[in-house]
Image 1 (tube, rainbow, N blue to C red):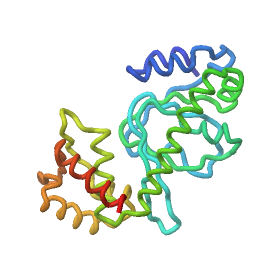
Image 2 (cartoon, rainbow, N blue to C red):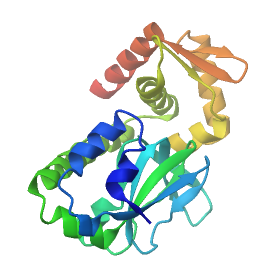
Image 3 (cartoon, one colour):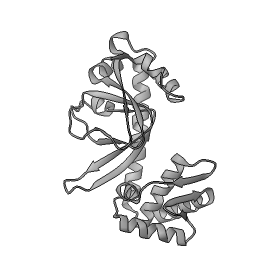
Image 4 (cartoon, helix red, strand yellow):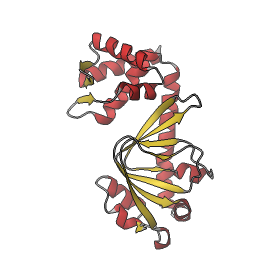
Length: 235
């Protein structure tokens, strides 16, 4: 076990600054934690397992996914550091994790016992307000995305997925997607056949550029995709 404040000090910026501000008033009695490093594609939380810890992502990206009885997997959102997992269940008084979480990249975590997290945040109104603010913003955004998805067919859902990826990963006004078609299928809820057909159609219309298996999105293509999605939703 390590001290939480010492563990936060190992995080890169801006994660370090955010977590130092959030946990600045945590008492010594709640600061015992452990540090965990994981490679990409590692499941670290499974839905319906006991929720006995808060996982604090200090480096890397994580995907939340729904695993159907049929064996189908649907990835419904991606998180990047800093992020806290398990706290929503803890604050809601739910004793088990609600979603399955898998590392999308190599990741580093601080793992804090749930009892320590709750003992701290019950007595730190500033930290509680900060986290409720973050949780509500995330919840409202996800609700809006869910409503939007109801109106979109295969190619339009793919377009929305591409714009969201661009927003997170674009560098110098260009986004190069080097992810597997199966991952895109998991995130959109469609088959790889549908994804491949839709990508080819977008490429034929000049909305994305293909370079082998890479999907390249320029700033102008991103703006065109956004405009088409807005038009589809408004209609």
